[in-house]
Length: 505
Image 1 (cartoon, rainbow, N blue to C red):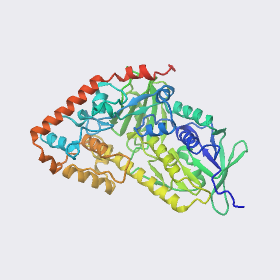
Image 2: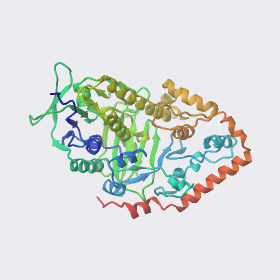
Image 3: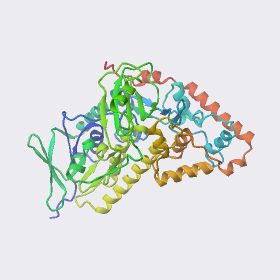
Image 4: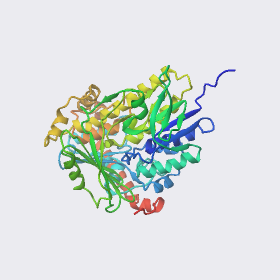
């Protein structure tokens, strides 16, 4: 009789956003009747829980789970996000927006931004954000979901969410447990390995209970309880490119209606996030301990809040980088256990989502084919490295020289692939997406332009159209976007009508 080669049990170590996102997705796709899913977490161990801003791809995850979006927003005290506003990054007093969705409207098979570049170089075009519905709506505090409006920008509104990470984990826990995921309260104190293979055979809890499984998912946070402490996988340190290694986090009282965007404000040795929720504002100061003392960083954060702090500031310490293998033997690291890149472009929750989706694609049997594991790791490496380069761009392409930190960032050597991307844009304004990397050409455009990188030319085929015609078409795009945004309700009105949450305090 042939032995069953199917994975029969998966254990997830750690809860929080990563653990419960993983549990919920596995329960929906794999079914607990096919494969038992058990999550171990300890109330004694806190979760980081600062990743409260997302990117539009999270809608794919919500659709996978078949979530009701209004219920999801209500239960997580959520708001909507049309992009990220960057303040003081290029130079003091400067701001720009990395808006989600389309930029203008492509013409004659050439991207809109090349036509815009021609006029902008002549001083006859407005700022890039004024040609995006998300940028203009952000500026005016407007929001709505897309509607069927034909060729109108209202038919294609890209958005993400801000939410309370703790409430999100609670929401997904209810979802997962309803679908058969077993939650075990306990603290893992020992990991046992097979003597011959080095695979994980089980984990021992402080209570003495031993829990065994065929496959283990490490969602234990920075510590990497399984992937690092047990399997000694190794870590690739990227702090020479992304020097911030600390963050103070604190919530504060709301101040007025919530903005439909995240704000990132650069300080002298890092930056501050501002994430508006329905019941509060999430804040944090990401900084480099090499260039700023912890007390000074906390004082800067507390001195730049919109309202009264609702808790004591909490200090997080991290090393930017990734595990040398995300999947090692019969263990997969997801979330902070797999690596960390600061929340500058709100990619943390997306990387959890992406790892889960990739795991579904490469879902193993007990043979654990090395070819599949190697390909999983290669794809994950590529994704991390491309996001890393996008984040480095924000620091490196700056005019700021007002502090030692910014002088270091301006002058540091950067990965060759990033240098090539910048140089290609500088020459003719060309941007190419490499093998479906996370951020598309429009995201690169918005940030490169926002950070002060100016191309010397534009696509030659733009000159097929007369300058007067280009002016006319850009004006038309601008008017249509303005008219569309005028039609939209305010962000606060939309929330009040569709997904107003209960007051927590």
